[in-house]
Length: 146
Image (cartoon, rainbow, N blue to C red; front, side, top):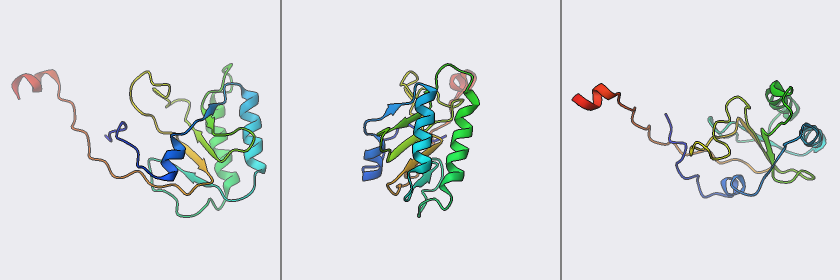
C-alpha cells in the first residue's frame, strides 16, 4: 500500500493541486460546473493520479467528462453533492473529481490523504513519484512472538 500522506512533488501542477478550491455542495452547482466544462473548449488533461500522467491533452474530453459525471451522479439521490472541487466556478482551470464512495477522509477526519478519481486540468500533470511500500501491519500474535 502506498503512503498517501507522503509530501506531494514541488511542481507547478502539484502546487495548483494544493491551492484554493471550492466544493460543489449543491447539485445545481455541480450541473453548472459540468455544463461550463463541456463548453469550455481548449485543451484539458484528464489525470487519474493512481496511474501514469498523460503526456498530451485528452483526445476525447467529452467522454472523460461524461464518465466523471456518471461516477458522481451515482449519489444524485442525496441532498448534496460534495464530490467535486474547482479552483474557479466561473472559469475553471483545475477540477478534482472524487468517487463519492471512496472519499474517505477528504475533509481530514481520517488523517489520510485521499486522491481524486480524476483531475481535470489545463496544466500538464506531473506524476506522483514512486513511493516505497508501507510495511504490512502485523497482527497481535505476530507482534507478541516476532
